[in-house]
Length: 72
Image 1 (cartoon, rainbow, N blue to C red):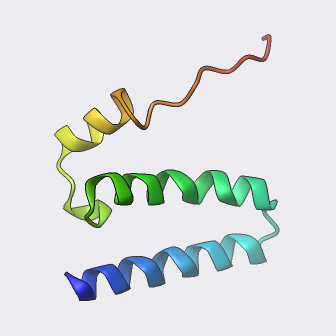
Image 2 (cartoon, rainbow, N blue to C red):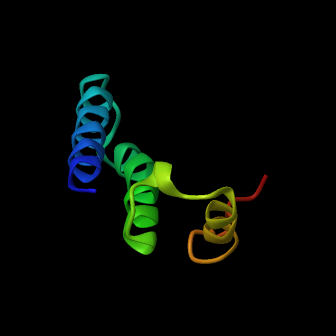
C-alpha cells in the first residue's frame, strides 16, 4: 500500500506540474486536483482501487457538486 500511495502522490504532483507549465490558472488547476484528493481521503485508498459502485456512491453523495447558478 505504501508504494501505491507514493505512486499516487508522485503522479498527482507530475500532473499538477504539467498543467501548471501549460499555463492553467491556479483556480482551474485546483478544480482538477481537488476532487481526486477528496475521493482519496474519503475512501482512504488510491483511486484505482475503487469499485464502480464506490465511485457512483461518491458522485451521488459527498462528491456531488452544486448546480450552476449562472443563467443560460
